[in-house]
Amino acid sequence: MSEAVFWPALAEFETACAGGGALVWTRRIGDLETPVSALLKLGAQKPGTFLLESVEGGAFRGRYSVIGLKPDLVWRVNNGRAEISRGGFADASFRPQRDGPLNSLRKVLERSSLAIPEGMAPMAAGLFGYLGYDFVRFIEKLPGGAPDPLATPEALLVRPTCVAIFDSVTGEIVLATPARKRAGQSAAQAHSAACARL
Image (cartoon, rainbow, N blue to C red; front, side, top):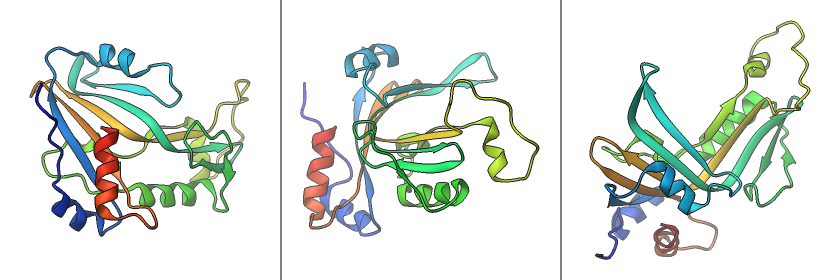
């Protein structure tokens, strides 16, 4: 098997990373793996791991299947209060946010935003999860909600550090990871760490 090639090259990465972060990725031929078999190998039981399948028209499998792994951030709304865990599910300490759920969501979306390179599937990086039906109550005033005997969060979003995208049209698997420079870290170190994750 040949050695993996990672994009972008370091010089391009340094330029892209000046804006706060960039996506690093590699491509593999996907003819021997299915999304489910890959999920089982990567650790379906690990907290924060997910598989999403696209469907078109409600009956036909769409172009993409996505596996997300090892979230570094979990955002949720519990009992009307936004909370963040910056250690993913490994750090069970959720810190309450000062802002209300809607403003907190805007901020976490802004901080998690990365430019997706042209030709790349749009779900190569971002937040994945759900905004529950009752989340609308943070947008407009409505009568009291239904009881919640399961104590389900009103919203839950995760930011995976690795995403595997199965493209049924090209027959490829794209492995992508967001790379954000940390304080005191050079672009070369951030790029190297991103390549090692993949």
